[in-house]
Length: 125
Image (cartoon, rainbow, N blue to C red; front, side):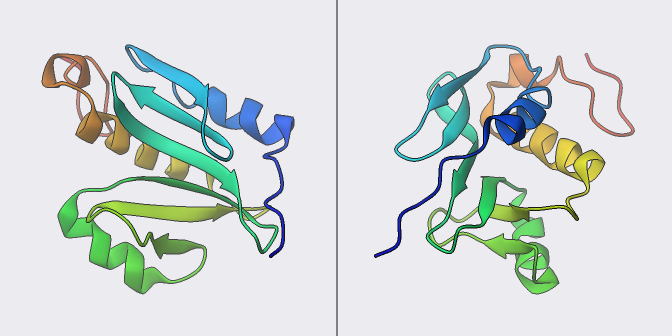
């Protein structure tokens, strides 16, 4: 079985700036790096056995099917009803990814923390 590559430091550094959320912490995962709020995982970046890098995150249940049908670089993860992801490569839309990760944080965070985060078209409470 092929090994999973470590997520390059440059990629982790680029992702890290997208997680400026209340009480959101970065930690080593079983493979790669994850960001959590309390005990809930917001996102998980890792290298796959195919040597590609991915990040998984939570999405609104009504959007999961849309991600599944968009196709590459998007995918629906095989675990959890609302877990989706994107392959990270030279074509990654970092602005869109920032919005998706903001949504994931707001899904996973306690309401009082999520209400403090600005979302597209909203002003934080």
